[in-house]
Image 1 (tube, rainbow, N blue to C red):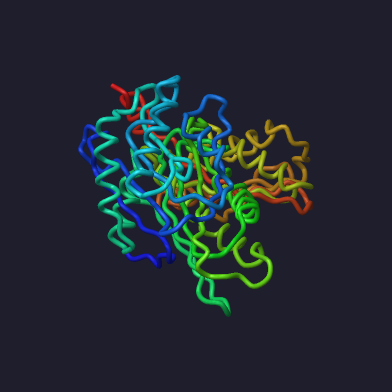
Image 2: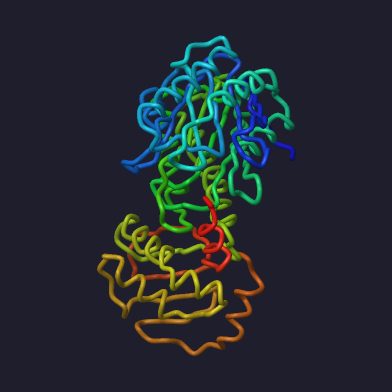
Length: 393
């Protein structure tokens, strides 16, 4: 897979035996020199040691890189988990010639099991030796962060400026235990822009609100979620960093975020819920999230059932006041409900549009207000239930 890669970074991904499958399970993404880094993390009060470690260090201007293991979350592992996380950082720092405080740590996988530190120790050495700045190295890292993912998730954007071309390239993982704020997902984005820590933090948080906080598979917010962006500072920015970086950062985050419910465990559809007409964007988000989280809506899409009643009633219990008489609903472009009344439509035709398209669009307008939101989710299939029933056993 070919990616435009920002200058100033190297990547590696290796298998060190954390996963019983033998698949790649340890990645490093590091700057040639200390870089600026910012992060947004899970809001779950039950969270992994890595989350506290990273929160204490971002935003920051002296980060050397991030090390990631997959297959073990190192969450709910007590003081041993805290010590193992610190040791993981120390091992990576030794390979990079930096201090442990300059290393961010991400873990993902089974909750409640201690990290296999003997394997981590060997893996850190292998990962440090395998670092490269080419596409193959990036691809190895992107694969090594995955767990139940069916495909690797990557995205890139480039911006031409008088000072040079700025590149943003990111990777993500996630397929299940996905709920806003955030989900069982990780994402790491690198850029060669020159930007201060506070500015990068603000740009990332705004982008995450429109992307990773607008996806759901099962509404389950995990213990290890994180989005980290690192900037090497190789390309200066003239004027406001936000004016240059905000839109491409938003675009890359949305592209990465949408790939997660598209890969939802057992999913057959990616569902986009678009809500307009509220007074505030936050009100539209609340309605969209409620629709996207409804098992009845999700299973209707699985069954290609244009059941508009499930969608409208889900909107009605979102806790947002709106008038049904001002509400319209379209499914894949077909008007199903208008001004509090069902519309005449051919259910077989609408059903076939669901069957024929992997992406399904639900458009709900609840008035004339300026508020709007988009939210993405997957449908709910028998395969999802089987997978998660057997996940640990």
